[in-house]
View 1: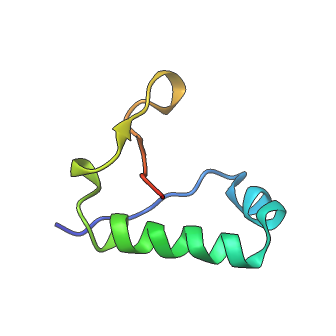
View 2: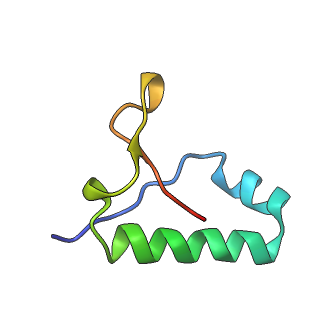
Length: 59
């Protein structure tokens, strides 16, 4: 199955605040684990307004 990512409008602002190194690391993890992986089988399901989304294990 092919997965896609839709970023929340405030993601760019958050990535800018983190700096280039951290932002690139986060984007690499997103690509590796979501776009090229199986996101429905990893991470913790989120609730409330983020229901349907998952938290990515990152450490």
